Amino acid sequence: MNDNIIELINDEGNLEKLVVEATFHMDDTLYAVLHKIDSDEGMIYYVEETEDGSIVLIKVEDQEEIKEVQEMYEGIADDLI
Image (cartoon, rainbow, N blue to C red; front, side):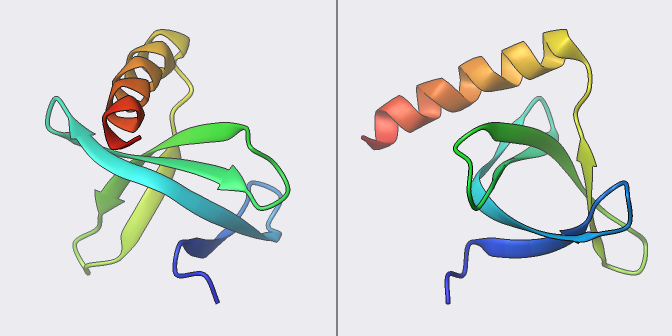
């Protein structure tokens, strides 16, 4: 079993398995880069903790923010290779 696989309920209410590619902070915000098991296309999410300690992932929709986070992630990924 891959520890980097999480299960989320998508907008349609269906269970979806996603691979956690990376998590990192940028400007006091925690982001996660996820992708579907059968795809390499990444999706960027905010990671937030609720008052009861649960983790909530919120998909980033703002295109400018996606671009900034993508650039940061690519820089981090280059350092890891």
